[in-house]
Length: 130
Image (tube, rainbow, N blue to C red):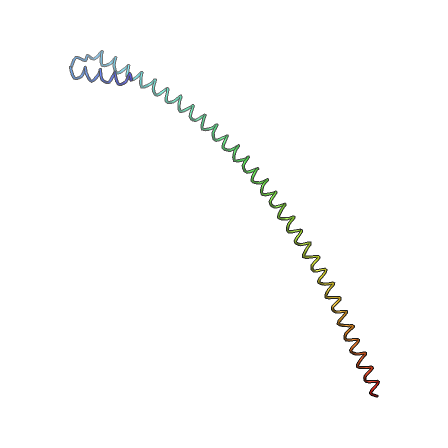
């Protein structure tokens, strides 16, 4: 605001050609002071913004660490559940294999008895025919 007024005054005076060297120096010095003050305020604001940025970066890191921890815990829980389910299926497959082996053994024994019975019958028939 002050810069605008100073600029207008300077332009008005230049247009009227009543500006003396002392007035020009004084107006330019006032304008330089205002520019320096504005630059100082901008620098302070820049420092404030940099501090806020650092704070936001720190918060983002914390949130990222928390989220990573949460995701890791969730993943670990899912893995434990999947491992338990896989173990259960493996146990079922083991017992199914056990039952199948037991059934195969019984079938082989029955087959053996059948062949033994057939051999016995053929032997009995052969003896009777003799």
